[in-house]
Amino acid sequence: MSGILLWWLLIVIAVAIVMALIRYVRRRALIKDRLSEARRCDGCGYNLTGITVPRCPECGVVIGFTKTFEQLGIDEAQVRRHVQARREDAATDSRTDGDDC
Ligand SMILES: [Zn+2]
Image (spheres, rainbow, N blue to C red):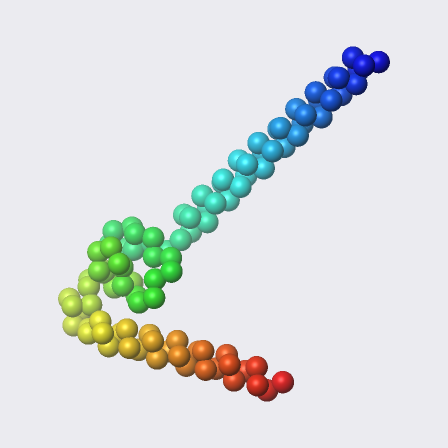
């Protein structure tokens, strides 16, 4: 009787280990897929997730172009001011949206 119980216990442990391995492999594949979907710089391939200004921090290329702000004749400080102003507008809008209720 205890022999059968021991076999069942081994089978349950083996199934649990296999399920944990399958879950681990699936999770790694999901993470890899998400990382490969991340926006990358056209110039150098740098991961652009979380950037605040449309410029690659690694090589300086403007997002969507193959040139820098300087090469395009655009003042980067002006772009930063524009981005900051849009953020402040969005923050103001989100605060006023809650006042309507
Ligand atoms: Zn780059």
